[in-house]
Length: 121
Image: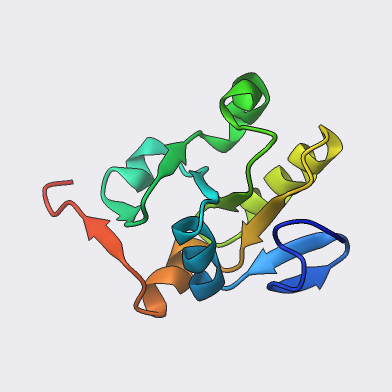
């Protein structure tokens, strides 16, 4: 493996899995954060990071053009399963600087990382 995520996270079966802290550092240094959760999930609780692109997992093939090929990308969801599949999809489409957020927003919040909560939702 080479590129932005080399030496970061856990490299398992060809995929980089980042901890929340590693993902936060990646987005602070230029990676794009993509949240694949449904609006009913993201309306209430969001990742509080500099830049988030919201794409529902099932819409990813149609929104591929919204994700730049020349920029590192961290994919996230609730627990890290849909995002792992999305990493595989993007890699098959030629993206080489993509990583999965291990544990999704559940582990992110458990680890005390920044979130925004809308109590009215």
